[in-house]
Length: 117
Length: 114
Image (cartoon, chains in turn purple, orange):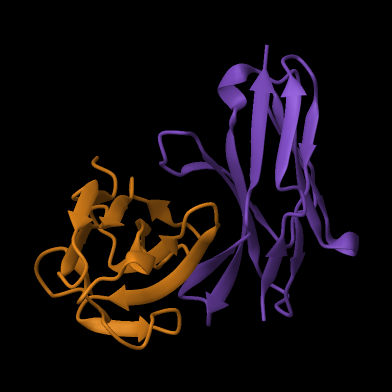
């Protein structure tokens, strides 16, 4: 069975600090995708990134960066110079393929990030 | 190009009533997924549908819950005889199906059972 673990339930940082959100996953599939979503206080889900299992290159997008390591089954997310607007719950998710046509997502329990002034 | 639409955004029901949640997928998408988020928890898969077919309902409670995605119109998640434990946010996602791993989420329906 697929599983996603986000061990950090809640993190508090002061603005401008860097923060890393951990994500560890379990799967028997060789082909899979990993995702990060942001859920601000308004409640909607905001897509941040998708990474496939064959691409282990790290990715940077502005203040966001992702570190994918297959050897440790981890897909960690770092926010550099955090801002108050980054305060949200962040979810890591793993796709479970249905014979290559479409998939369902398995979500972690989320990490609540609180950024204060 | 409208995204995934869900209505209502907020729904209040008394115990024992029925709740109907609607989801209109993105244009051109024929795959719909429903997820439930209980308070302070992550999202849990409920059901996956294609037009007129339920593909996977392994996450659906066995009683009181049903889902459909008719040939015409939105997908409907129906909860009969709601109980307080059904209070949650229900998210719908859609995908084209050709790109296997891209799901677009709607804004969610927040169901409160009083």
